[in-house]
Length: 120
Image 1 (cartoon, rainbow, N blue to C red):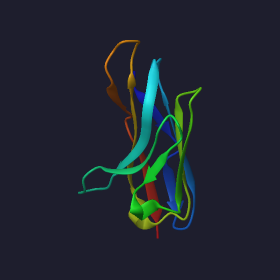
Image 2: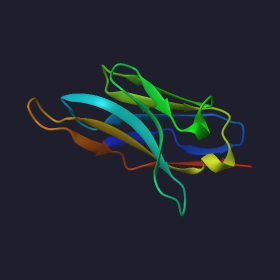
Image 3: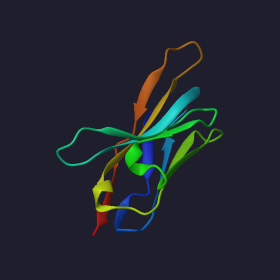
């Protein structure tokens, strides 16, 4: 099972994009879901995370501009990105931590990444 992201693309500074992510197959239960990003020459960093109960956390650089949400019934997570800046340019990766089947241990699932490019 992999996570499948969509919604990336090219946008001008100040614009908006909405990323979506859902698993390609069945996952028994998912606890946390989140979005990471990796810019050229930089390490991957956490952008935003959300628990199954709806608690969220954000990187300081995106607070007030990005909003993470999820649909537990669909195991889908979204990232609404507003007021985009050139420094938000990166490959964005979806992550989910969950159990593949009852009684199994937790596992980290990752998407293949979607490119977001913000032009100045």
